[in-house]
Image (tube, rainbow, N blue to C red; front, side, top):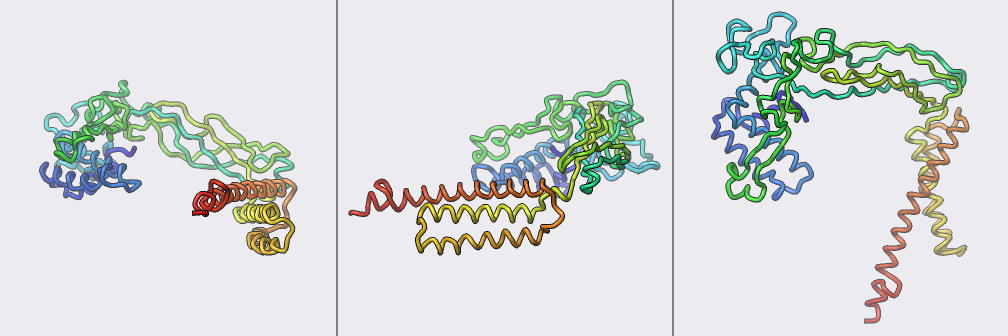
Length: 380
């Protein structure tokens, strides 16, 4: 789920940032009555209903709204100063001279806490980085050694990956009190309309369900424990590889968040002489479908004059398949390419047979047989 500052709750509810609590409640009521899952059956209605409920849960609570407004302020953003120089203060005067709740501007210590909020403390394993490397047939046969440059997340040098500049890594989320969830009582807001739906429980948008936020958010990585950087890796591709081969370099993927382990770098080999293009795959599949039509025609009609009409029908997908193959290019391919083409033909046959069986069963049930439509009602 996106964090608090990734969404404009005022825009979601359709109210200005100066709206009163009563205006926010009424705006939520209007939208909730339209988007309630019991009324609106559109596929995305439930997700939109949860979104407006989340916006109401934050903006209807004075403390949560103050934190949200501070997080969204232009000078500080979500996690503290965004510029490289002296940050502008959203509270006027010195950039360090105000606090959203009054009192000391450093209630917990650290620059990011001046906004009264902090990023979620949510350790997650870093994702793998997958890079596709195109090789010629000769390179794949002989093997190559390549140096690749790519972008990835690396461990932050300032906080050493923890996300916190202080010794303490995390503290209880002030929005949800450490539960990782926030509640919206629809019965109170929607009156009788909300009865039956009760209290909606959703993931806390500030801590993203972890119940914890970073104690002293790092100014360099904004509390995530990682930053984007350019990296280089040397990949050895052995001789005799084929399209789809993967070379893996451990630990060279994205760094995890808040000190969690990182992913790997995966180099995926692409050999044009062995790879089916989308058009080529469609061509082979269409030829398989044409074979099914002809086969079903022979089974149903036998070798009779009527089979010629079936052949005309089968000629359409067959001609389309040949056209796609020619357009996709038939030259310069090796045996692996033709093998994959044969597999695509088999897939076309399988899909065509499933459709044919369905049609035959449908026709049998509705038109013929002792238990079909005519079998049951034809004599009446």
